[in-house]
Picture 1 (cartoon, rainbow, N blue to C red):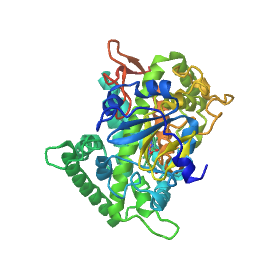
Picture 2 (cartoon, rainbow, N blue to C red):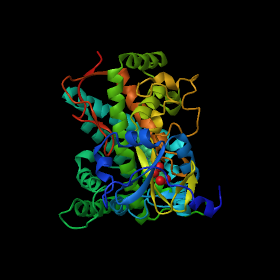
Picture 3 (cartoon, rainbow, N blue to C red):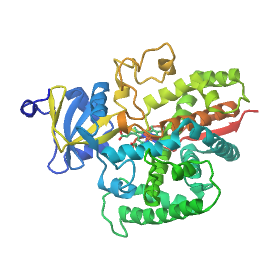
Picture 4 (spheres, helix red, strand yellow):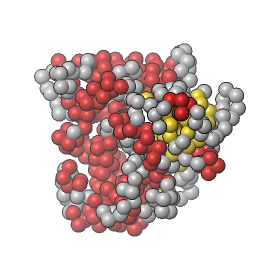
Length: 443
Ligand code: HEM
């Protein structure tokens, strides 16, 4: 339907705006079943009012398809003010339109297969370093440890810093992250104000690192080296100013999500011993000393299935917001310009018509003969889709697979009883008590 008058005469999706001003924000933040309840009542598309905006929630593969294929036409990205200001104007996540596409082309050079291959040794070294630490600790909460592990790898690859989680960079980063989704009031004592100050200091640190690298004759083959050299087709490179914002975005986007994914893998595999045995068997069949290369990782097909099922069942990013830039029509409803739109990853992955018994952890859904997730485009979207699909997708898969393969080859772990394994969902899913485990080397 293209006629503007016809679109304007269409009904709005069903739903309730809730209370004046605050709308349904409190229920949205507090009630884990907010979307489920409304989906049952209104269907796959409904309206609500959250974070000061009339918002349409759209669930399922068809909605995802509509949103991803109309990016920049009907929809654009929509971050809260605090996120936009702390990520910075040049950040890939904040950019829109052709600028976004140009920058994406340059940045994607750090995620090509040759680049990924050169990151393997850094991931392996850090993985062994942390495994040795965890073996010594023996009983500990795994989640915060995994968070340090992924931060160390991201910082080593992106800004060349060793053990960043234990450094000044790590402290500044923590204060900065805390402000990303806060009230954007810039005063010295507010969460946002402190985060803004940390951003300045972080950017200064990053600038020193970039300048040092540019001035040295040592052109290391890490992500920083690649991004300093990367050019678009007209030979333009990223300025130092811009590079700082991009590096900060990549550190953040990469590390929080990966922590959640790795922790979910560790939890789900521990709860499903037959899956654990099958991953280990695959490693044994391939050879426990098989070196980690891109080619060899591709051969770990069962591990790949387990990874997909983990990301289906507990996607680190539950959904994302867009802004409607032109009134359009979806499913017979009017989607008005100026409204917010939220696409849903977690609920898409619970579609019973695509994933029978969707609450069950079953890696067989993704075996080579299964058609689940292939029945409809965009029914499996842990990394989003379209022109804003996750730029770090292949790196994320690489890191999780290396972690998982080396873990299963050499170590065993047990969940400590008497802990709360319920998931806290915001900002990314994590077990309430931090995933307490007993960790040992296989002798
Ligand atoms: C975008 C998920 C790892 C960098 C996204 C989006 C999702 C996502 C769903 C799209 C958001 C939207 O539609 O607005 C994940 C998951 C990861 C992961 C589940 C790990 C399991 C990474 C890594 C990096 C990264 C390792 C970088 C090192 C980015 C960036 C964007 C993005 C920069 C914005 C892309 C754009 O707007 O063009 N990610 N991500 N992510 N991701 Fe990831």
